[in-house]
Amino acid sequence: MAGICQMCFLGQVILSSFLTGTTGNRDVFSSSGEDVSLPCDNALSGCTSTVWNYNQNIRSSAVELFAKGKKKNNIKRHERLSLGSDCSLNIYKTSEEDHGMYTCQQFVYDTPYGTDKSVSLHVLHVSSTQNEMRSGSSVTLSCQLFSHENSCDTLFRTEGFQLVWVNQAGVNLHKDFRYQILLPGQCISTLTTKLLNEDNNTEWRCLLKMRKETKTTASYTVRFTGSNTVIPVTTINKATTNASETEGSKICVSLYRVIVVIVQISVFAAPTVIFLQIICARRA
Image (cartoon, rainbow, N blue to C red; front, side, top):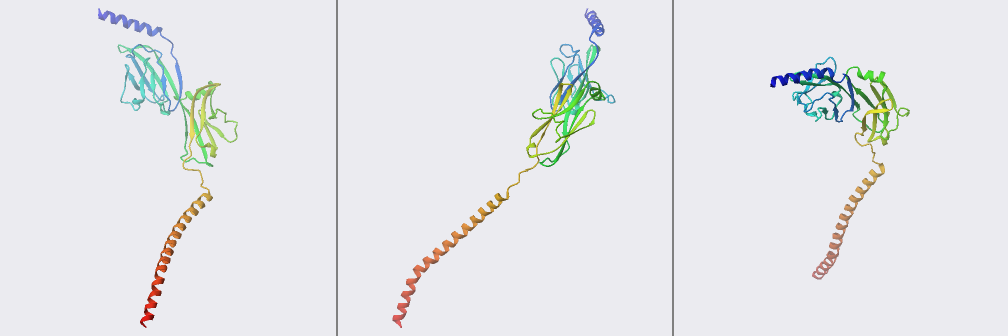
């Protein structure tokens, strides 16, 4: 009886595999450092049949992240991965290295169930090669969208994606002559400017936009290295003067004490000398 039930269930699985939804990839956009959740549109309840695979590019072999709802611990970033209650794949603090193609599969009795669902994760990242930043120096920020293979070029060429630089108030910087903005690649935009005193702790943001819709945002905060504040010369002279006055005061006090001692000795010594002169005169 149990064998008949399993055969019936397997038949339903095979039949449903022809009736389930159509294939197609879903795009998910995130900035580096954010948490992201990748949906599994063909998931079964309990997630015990769920398998998640990952490919960063078509030349690399697939890496199995989850098998039958259980996480593989022999992968490099296993501590940042988890499975949601709806079988979605959660990535904690994404980095540019997390970009790529993620595929959610279902297996029932080791038989593929339904249609595989793929998710392309695109990660936006802003960086700078400058180690030292201070007023008067030049800084270049690079904003890049990391995507699976050539999908980034497809987004920009056919779907109207673009990278836009704004300041922390949201003002577009592309028409400001202070900033030099270049597009060295289809998925890269650089911003170069000369730092001013007020730029310390200033945030510049790179927006990934599809026409008028913002898909994700990556930011960079400039923090000056070292101190750019010059101590005024008058302050230094004042400090030196105060120190000299203090030393002078100490010397004056010491001299005063010596003079007092000498005066005291003189006061008591004078009568003694006169008395001795009188005695000597009498004896003579």
